[in-house]
Image (cartoon, rainbow, N blue to C red):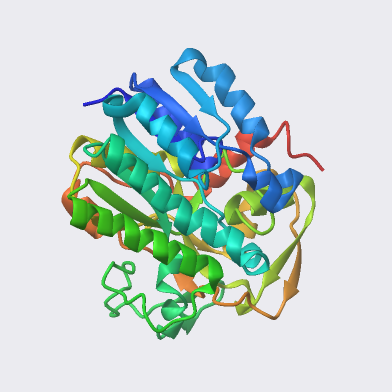
Length: 356
């Protein structure tokens, strides 16, 4: 097995966690990131700070390429250079925001769908046996989750306990006949293509359909980065706008550490064309209201929120993932961080940076 891991979006949340994790396991890490987050979300979203911190920490084990995944030739050259030494590919680069995608559909599709195809084809030509991990999204299910029979409780929406998906939504939920957002549609294209390369070319590919992926490495901005942005707003005393559903919408959140541990489990025992819903499940979830209550307690500061009755188009009212399929395949893996731990981690990591 090759000793090199290629990671796209290497300065982002999941990318940087992956860089640290696999470098610590003794692999040489090749990072691909051109800080498009700065273009998408402005200064808040830029990953420059994370790249600088990471490069200092990891040193020679990390080689950075400021390459755009839309650059087919560039990716081809990169993969040709490392060839059979590549033992793992983690494709985490993306345009990650609904609201943004609708403004520039071409850019969104070229990055999310075509960029993924560029990665798959480079891997097929130069590193066909390397496990290929793709960070997809629960938005591939569109707004289908909103048709679930939700019950309103004091601080959250919830499913009845006897519902088949009370413990979490599994991979059998349909991805058809729903409103996905432009972003969701570009990720569907990428998601299906990663599966197809697995089945058609017998490549060890895996699609991880994440919900709220979070952790201290997040460049939190209003349009992307729910939990981190909640914590940032409380600590900096910024106003946070809650969009619709009375603030009782539920998300399960998975810490980047737990997600990357799942990547390692797949790398050690790869399978072909797998799909996994991946999130905090019943261990780690909260509503927006509950998140603010926790963040306020941890930071010792009041939350400044403004309620906007209009919910975001296609936004999920309730999402908790079932990780049962992944756990069946990889029984040693489990979620280790819950929401209070995640928020405390963000507070500790950013208290010198996020100040009122």
